[in-house]
Amino acid sequence: MNVVVAMKQIPDLQQIRIRNRQPVLEDIPWTMGAIDKNALEAAVQIKEAQGGKVVLLSAGNEELEDTAKEALAAGADEALLIIDDKLDEMGSAEIAKILAAAIQRIEKIDLIIFGEGSGDNYSGQVGSRVAEILGLPQVGYASAIEVQGESLRVSRSLEDGKELVEIGLPAVITVISGINEPRIASVTQILKAGKKPKEILDLSDLALDLGEICPVKTESNLAPESDRKRVAVKSVDELVAALKGENLIGR
Amino acid sequence: MAGILIYSDKDKLARELLTVAGLIADARGWEVKAACINNARQCQLLSAAGARVYQIENPAVLPADAANVAVALKEACGKLDCSIVLLSSDRRGRELAGRLAQVLGAGCLTDISAVKVEGEQIHCQRNALGGATVATQYIDGEKQVLAIVPRAFAPAPDRDGGSIDELQVEVPPSRIKLLEFQAKDSSSANIEEAPVLVVAGQGLNSQEDLAAVESLAQKLGGELACSKPLATDKKWLPEDRVIGLSGKKCQPDLAVLLGISGQVQFTVGIRDARVIVAVNSDENAYIHQMADYSMVADLHQIVKELNDALA
Ligand SMILES: Cc1cc2nc3c(=O)[nH]c(=O)nc-3n(C[C@H](O)[C@H](O)[C@H](O)COP(=O)(O)OP(=O)(O)OC[C@H]3O[C@@H](n4cnc5c(N)ncnc54)[C@H](O)[C@@H]3O)c2cc1C
View 1 (cartoon, rainbow over the protein chains, first blue to last red):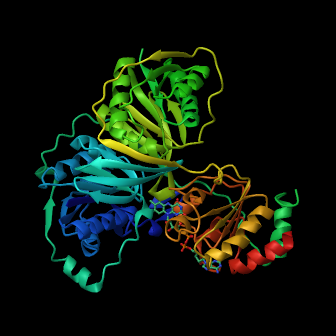
View 2 (view 1 turned 45 degrees about the horizontal axis):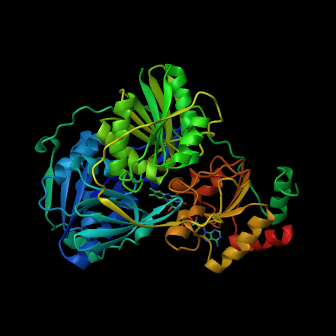
View 3 (view 1 turned 135 degrees about the vertical axis):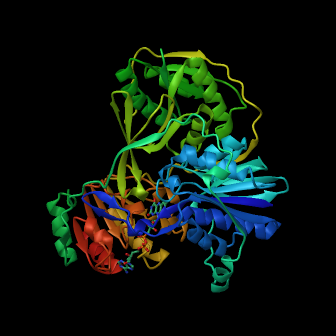
């Protein structure tokens, strides 16, 4: 079973500071999206049970080679990276075409796994778009994946219930973070990660037809205004009094 | 005349989409059209709200198969001359959005919480950078798929002018087989409606301690909610109690946050509360900065004292 895991490199959100309501992104380290780690873990578990390989696929700026090491250490066998600083400006529609074009270069792929949404934009479009471009069936929001010969049984978790479906391979699956607990790479795995095979492409290496795209434009991107009282309360009595003052208890 | 099409497999969310579609349609002098797939009840509901409803009856179009729903809606857009499609941004809707946008060659925005028509552009607000910021974005082009956050708009009221017509669509055989659907029991919590939320985070020592937190929630006339790790990692509470980016966005009068660090993916779900109380033993925890009343203390002790004080 050959599995591709698509990962998005994102700025480390914990380290973003807000200045005058603007996010400050300079000097923020890059990292792998949190749910992408669950996608990778799901792929590695399938490979361990079924044989085959896990290919890490990602498109991003020049920091990507470093970020990808984390994923290679955590169990991916090889990486296919599209590196171009222009990629940071691109939207989901363009990125989906790029990833799909890259996947078409890989021989015999059975399964492509995405996280249900990226850590930064959380728009959840790219997996669905890639599935459509490649003409593959898809199941989103998987909470469990079970291989059964040429097909998968996938449990998906929805707001109003749980659904169990069967889907033939090849297919695209997106996973939720509850599907597993991503493993932490050991020191030896981290050391070995640097030696795993990597193919690095730039945009001109892909036979890309970006075609007609209705691009997303951003008018503004600001932190919401907040005007909290920020009163330090020293005792429960004080808190109860404050909440009574707000008319929130003893109504 | 071009048009705007709405679709959701959920009746209530479809009625909310009608409200948004009305804003856009009024500005452009368009009609609002609605696609209902294998759902006669929804046809009635939407036509009662004034929509031109197109009823698609085709057992091969399963909600579980986003690919086929996308094909069906593409055909509907073609036949009904619609360039903009509104979907609900629940899990099914979000999965469908990307697929539909790709078949249509459309631009797509999901998780939209506010909409404003500005001349030719439809300005949409959505969270960005994990919720640290709110972006105003629009799609530059005619074809647009917009997925709207549940409950961001009121459901459309009843109105005259509705109609129901049949619409035939052809789809390929489904490649997804639905084996089982287990509905969540309806007794599950509705934290979005609760006037007070008492929210437990990873600062909670053990699952047993939840009882005291729940009792506090009851005394305050509210519901128990949690941060994501408590549901997805520890599995102490069901996922429908999670607040945040991938959970629910709530606006209670009072939110009491216990042992929560305040990472953006959480705070985005509670920052619209009227009053926020935070209890965290770490004085440097970010959550103190977004609280109206904050206590640097052990949450277990505070919960106990509050329970006593409110008894
Ligand atoms: C794409 C994406 C989506 C996400 N969506 C969500 C979401 O919807 N909702 C969500 O919650 N998270 C979400 N997360 C996860 C989020 O980033 C955080 O990991 C999570 O919110 C942290 O939960 P927490 O504050 O309970 O835990 P922690 O960050 O571990 O914080 C625990 C806090 O408890 C305090 N504490 C410890 N002991 C005590 C004590 N005895 N008394 C008082 N305080 C104590 C500590 O000081 C600490 O500040 C998402 C992440 C990603 C990447």
